[in-house]
Image (cartoon, rainbow over all chains, first blue to last red; front, side):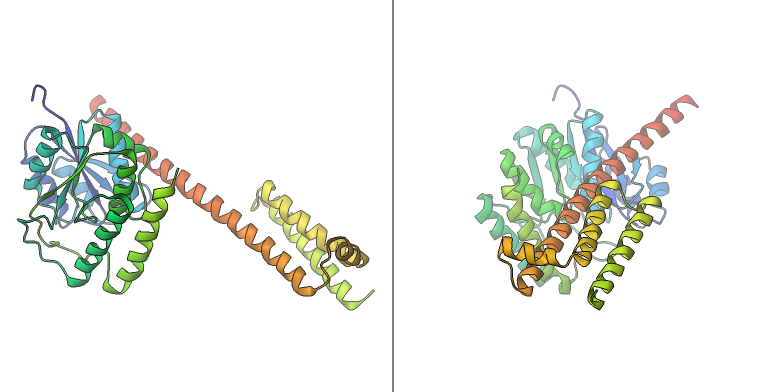
Length: 233
Length: 116
């Protein structure tokens, strides 16, 4: 590579004081070109202080926007500051930071617009609850019917996007169920998408925001949203 | 005057006063207030001039109370739909503002750091 690519590592965080330090440190260890950008989604804890102390760029939202709005803020930041790519990493530590270069490498060398770090494409020993597995399988099948895309891990937030995709997502990004919905957006824009295996750890702290009781309701809403996205102007 | 006319008349006057108060205290924007003022005005006219209902019935062919209920129902649904659209738009604008605000605040902090 002629010039060092600047990659904004976008970390949406809501009350992640326990894990944010490790995540930022992990990114710093990757070396030059990887800039940790924490989007604090109006946390009530010390997320900002800890992230700043570890040397991250911190952008604080004055109201809680949810994951979609937070990630999009990161894309807007990257767009305005001339970054070559973005990679989204959860603030809870479930996305291993040492896998970031692998995704970025694939993005640039194989010329993809979006590279998804997947829990299901071979070589991954991520343990997952049965309910969640079924849900993700259904979403994957539904996405294939809608768009023809063959993505196994539709809800993975661990994804790298290039300049072209980040410029688009900075202006248009789904707010409610950003991971599966943005794939429909990407398909409509004709982005090249690839899924590569990554080793993910189970959440270090905290609980998933999706409880089994609500997951059926969640599934119906996501699929409805994806279906409508297909017809959006 | 029938008791029902008096009741409806009182309701329409009360409705009118409440709407006017909301506009005066700036709880309601004029564009929405016009709708409610018109509604209270319509109720008032109907209570003062019951014959109007007969005229409307003859013109439109709505003789049954159910038909009138359906009209009211559609009217209410239309208003609710309108509000959903307004809320969605406001939510979207709010999101844009929150993001812009956060990015600008970050920029200001960076500039201040550079200065000191």
